[in-house]
Length: 278
Image (cartoon, rainbow, N blue to C red):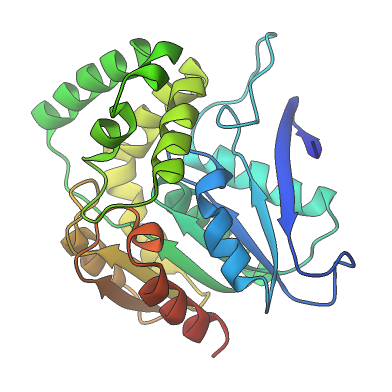
């Protein structure tokens, strides 16, 4: 298993490439969302590996990048995760990339794009956007989120149709069972502190205030993709973010929710390919 130690945490990464000799094609890096891992990007990366060397990795505290038992001084702010990603690229000797990021990962990517615009040629932000602050709604979300993160047990994987029930909130169309199962497994294995900490940083008064500014500052040509039926990050939130900056192109994929890359792969891939290669 390939890992790079980044600020005290071993980060898992892998290459999806059609040639054993890396460097002949541009690099397309992927950033996953909350509770998941790079595993759900694999089929997308495989489909795009004819034109790109695709880099997948698991963010700190998720997937195959577990936190060490010793305490860390790092926070779970989105900017910190953007810095982790920058260190990963430097450690691998990668100077410039194309980037595709999803959900929480898209927020991390937005900070990265503004911190290091010279490192990215084009970017795709999938299921991202801006939202309004509601103190009571946020407080209820934090309370619910804490319960969701606390009460996780491996035996859930053995419950019939658990994967289907768990993913129902995220999907409008059916996706393969292996994809549903993998996401449920990643969610159950996510580090408690990372899972809870990123809930508080992704959905916060700070995020409400800062993210519109970050979208407005983008200098890198960006495609923002929303799922028409997404209830996690509704399409109107993506449209509002795209309207803040002429560098952002907006695409809404019909009859998909929070995983358009898995729910409508042909449509998603065609649009992403056209944008990245234009």
